[in-house]
Length: 160
Image (cartoon, rainbow, N blue to C red; front, side, top):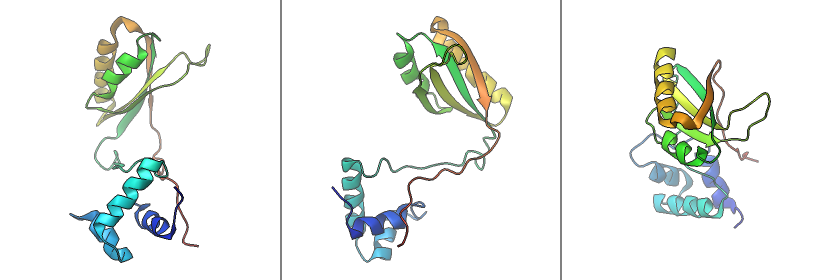
């Protein structure tokens, strides 16, 4: 599938976010002179074809009061990392969890889990819960705290 002009118009209309209204696809459609159902169908087709990777909320954790954000990093036994990572990723205070290769001898960690709290003490308590879940499969861990807010944006299509 390639992008036609309508697809490009839909992407341009939604790439900075959907309108915060009860029926956002209808609002986007109205701005483009088409129906909301057509917007949904076209976006769904782009998702299925891999032209759009995902449609989802991107919360600003700081504005929500979660100012102690820490990437917890864990050295987990390779034979258990996938199973345990799935469980960690389902914890309510973990926004994302993923496996990455180790870089010995400097970087022994292979499991990453982003923790969000209102204080460092809260994040440390969350890390204790993760450690308890990992049990003997975990050999070491650390928490890397955020020091700056980075702008999160995806691909942008220009007007020209």
